[in-house]
Length: 333
Image (cartoon, rainbow, N blue to C red; front, side, top):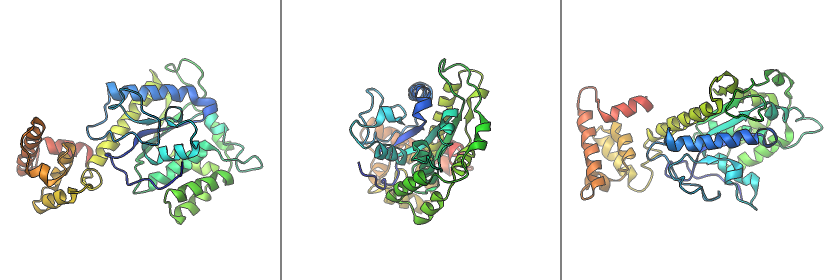
């Protein structure tokens, strides 16, 4: 149950594609529906790119049966193990996540209005926001995006229209730090390997400044989505996951070639001015010289050889077109 720095992020390691942040008192029913839509959508319509599934984190509950190819989504009720430290659990979940999705509702904001004064307390929603904002800035973190979802309270008909978020509430946010929340966030960030500069800056943030930083992230206003707004939000979340997974796959130094033998592949490609082939090789699982140079035998190896040969031929043409450059133009530009 200890909080410790996570290992370097890798699509071949333990991960969650999505972390769902919400206020339990007001939005538990909305986040439960969103969870279902994201998971089912990742199986049916918007699948995680090959090589981007990672491993289900060992500190979490066993994953649902048949969910191996689905997006890995952190929802506390689905993931946290009974009898374990819940705070350590959600911190680990956040530290291992790629996309932080937060429900910014009337209830989420109302829970912040009394912070910083005589009724100050550690607020779990504010704590998650503070940590997510810091992890987003860390070059070693797996967190790539923050996606806020704005709406007013919603009690029924979750696929029907949503009322607009009560923007007037923002004027009442405390212009002072929540000392207890910020202090706890600083302790957690220190255990995750944060620098003292980060910690000092974070401790000084007022409640309003934290919310303002969240508002700067491009999100979705459910009131402005005419048809099935929650399904639309789930679809856009998966678009972000697919984009971020593909973006990581375009960085062979941090994706596929960090294991033993991978550096030799990079040297091989660099010496021959073929580094543009690295994402395709990583996509096909060719991450060692043995796999690259001694492909023979199985159907999979024959297919891999075909991919490499096609990529080499493509790179030799003027403009370097072909299957390699198509993927790179889309995600690696």
